[in-house]
Length: 397
Image (cartoon, rainbow, N blue to C red):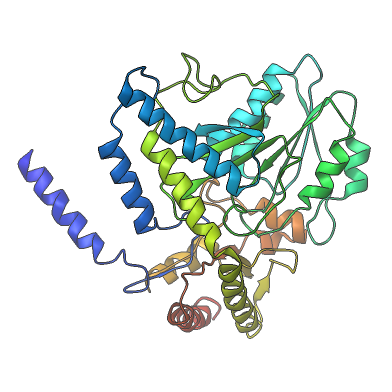
């Protein structure tokens, strides 16, 4: 056992030399996950050591831990300007999306079994919707315009008396398409039996959204420099859900289990930090994004899939005739890290999102995602451009 632990420690020491972004590698996969901020990690460690009580315990240590959760919850709602809503803490966005969709479907199926969504959703949306289809639910996909935004007239035409849920991602994770959440919410206000769910995973921490008229909102801390393993489903207080996990009260009745005090506190810290300079960060990413778009115009086989309706943090391109995995691993040899599709997607398939936007199978089967951050340096971009050009010539020869 001692030998195993010793070797593992050596492994961690060796890996740490390569995990300082910008020193030995160029990390361009921020939409998959972000590196944790030091201050967030320090907050997590401090809370773990200081607040040792179970928040559900009645003694002083439990009351103190519970108060810390309440303070974090109020802070999150205040930052997002959602003070009249309730937070259910989850392990991340995938769980939050499952709880929103299954929770609504199972609890309100007496009202109807009709759900509306789009062709630009994450797999953690399609998964629970597919499960509900096995229980007799009917699903419609709303059409989108050329820029990827929802066709509002088609949405209105799809709405029925038995429509109980519309689920739309605020920002698509592969291409970066933004949806007009406020406009959709305004339409759905006229349908009292229908709930509006927004997967805001790729939006929170990148741009400010007005989510006050949204019934259910999902997001995860590790997308904005927080820790993995903690996310939120924020819902209107009047909404009742069928829980995924039964067995007692936690921070709410909708998810059983001992509350993760330190993770919850760290989520609030990460959110507060990212909101402090969000506008400045946005313009920084926008500048890098434009630089890369100009660079890719030099290559005949490169098609830019992200359009002007996309956030600058995501730049999706297709290198025609080159398999995404081939390009990804070629750049990996240069210590450059990008992705094909989303991190949670099945491998070997064409991008459904690129296909839905471009209607071009060649582009859908050869797309890669470059995702940027305000932490991305000019040195990293120069390194990427140099290595991309070199590998482009090799792979398209």
